[in-house]
Image (cartoon, rainbow, N blue to C red; front, side, top):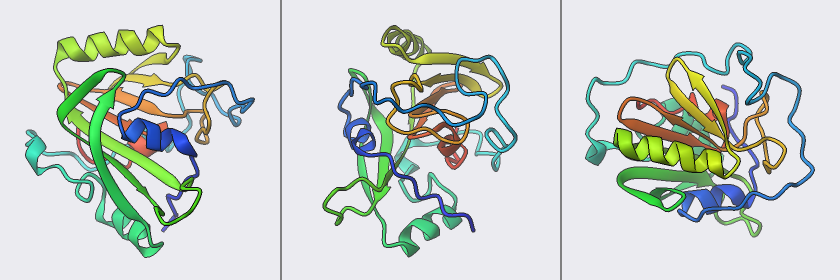
Length: 191
């Protein structure tokens, strides 16, 4: 099985703990590929469908372990990773029914080997306001068949996936997902 380990530096810790990070230009450029905000379709694999979720999700039943496929969790734990659960926060909006999960090697002195996954219910009004607030902060918006994608500007992202996406939110019908990359959203089996 392909390893899902990613290096994202301190941004995952900041996002997962609810702190809003003013992403600084780091001189990183996205890798080859269409990238966010270009209006082109991402390459195959970037939005491959995942198993159909249940029609209704009880937020109280969502855990860091069942948000992802068992194979993904097994891959993380086989490398010695553990998970830390944090509140789900976007900018100044805390979503109390949400779950943000940071997987990684927390015994590492640099703590830079982390991945972020999160899911939360969200009202339409909060989703619209949050999308607008993120865009006002320089995040990029794309309409997708699954909902609205809001991703950090790749020119200021600390880390990007193969298609040029860094930290990315997907706003669906009554829910929102987050991951340290857009490709990471595909690993979340809720929503």
